[in-house]
Length: 309
Image (cartoon, rainbow, N blue to C red; front, side, top):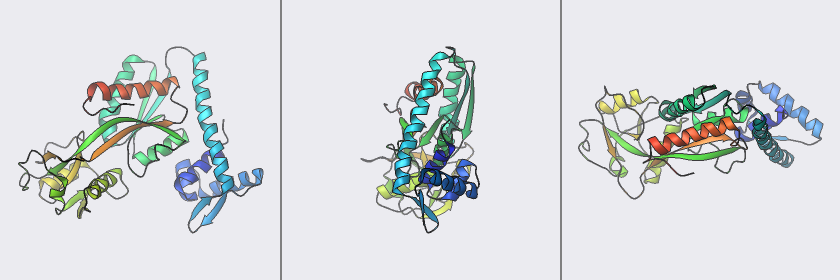
């Protein structure tokens, strides 16, 4: 119902390039440029300025963006109000998105609850990196996303989204069976500062998580290998090729001989898992049911890790 060009403008604001905005909006770069030019002509203002390969929103575009955020949130609230005129039983499709651990552990449990409580509700899950999950939310292609807090996702103050804390999950050190620390009950993160490290690729959330944990402890991890799958990372650790950080809930393959050691100290590195939705959609019955199910799983099945809303 809202001019799609405003959605495109919001994507440009998030990603900084026409090409990236085109990708998340499933358009060609030329189509994005054409839409922005047409919108600028209609409004009789300049919306974009080119800065090298990137584009920058003008002051007029920033003003329009603020109104676009308000319109989008108000449309979500309108849908919530209209829901009161429908049948009491929840129907339709609730679409979840989640990164690997959440998609494997938290979201399926929430879906199981929803299947019992709302049998007419259709459920859909897409496993995806956290930053991309926000693109899906903004485009209306998913309703509730379980994400890990990293610098690559929008801030909690971003007016386009609402984010709710779910889990605060400690990170453990993962070492091989012959590692010098293998028999320890706990370690300080600095004790493995000089070891070769196994991390995910730089564009992945796991890489950002490990880098932040290490820099907060006062060192840059000497990266020896990149591995995005736990199976690959565990195999390298078991073979003595390096150490890794692993979140407490991450399921490791049992056929690799590794040791998980809790990190001791005043500041234990922690992964924060959040639920994210479009601003204004929290009162829509389907979205509210999804949030309640996620919160219920965390509060009752993972109480030692659950965070208060």
